[in-house]
Length: 368
Image (cartoon, rainbow, N blue to C red; front, side):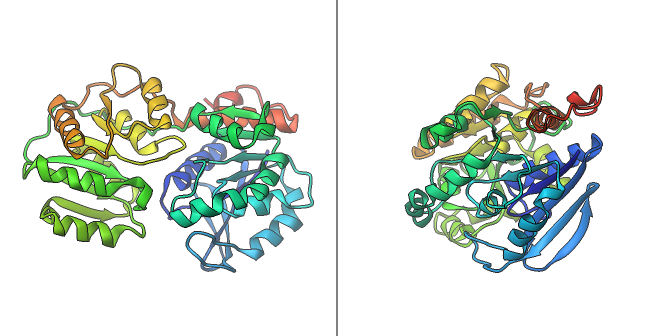
């Protein structure tokens, strides 16, 4: 099957959507599909990543929040019919609108990674105005893939016409060595994600004050809030215990996971919560904001996983939960969460259903 995957950004860009798309595409290619990623970047290029052809089209509008590549839109209009299926990602990026407006009739799958609002005050204000365009994408999609039931409910709240076309496929996790027990020395708390206001990393930094010098916060990720967060750590007197690692490659991130005593996500809204899932899959005790996606992830992980849902607005409660997480020690077994092989298998079943093309025998399980 020839699959065109449309996304706002792709590896080496890092983020939850970027990770999802990369793992999915690599798995599809491994299963024998012909996969092309169609994305946008500062400059045009064509490369191969993980056996996947990646076409990057130059940006016409390079704005951080509303990037647009008209060459990519033109490519989709002219070549969208060359694929057996198009799979576009992210309601919150204009690239999905370009995929939906093409004159071709190639079956379209849409994974919205939907939050129901914008990530900044401006984007939240513009969100209702964008909804008619979002409705064009939803109406054009033959199947809509949500990563949690919570995301599905948000989509149906705002787009009830999507009823009957939504499939829930939870994000996967990467198998990692589980190293149980307590870490010696300074207790490392891992906080991963794009440094945006809605991730509420500032609340985690504030919790470092009552935790004291035996605890260190490792912040992995980058974004527009980085400078303000570093200044906050300085004002609170914890700059020496808050390490900003920036973006890390897979090997460096695996090292951070191996050293961590606990993990935390204070995010105000997520479609899934991949950083929480990665931590639980590595047996790391985790503290997370009590948002619907995290509550659903707790159910997926099961009672054996150490996951405490705590309001990050309450600094003392957040600090206490992190202290308890470190004291609990890492689990000897990983949480029983879906793998990326599971995601690939379920997604290929969606492609088969929407195109009417049966998968080869044995291929429904992602080639396993």
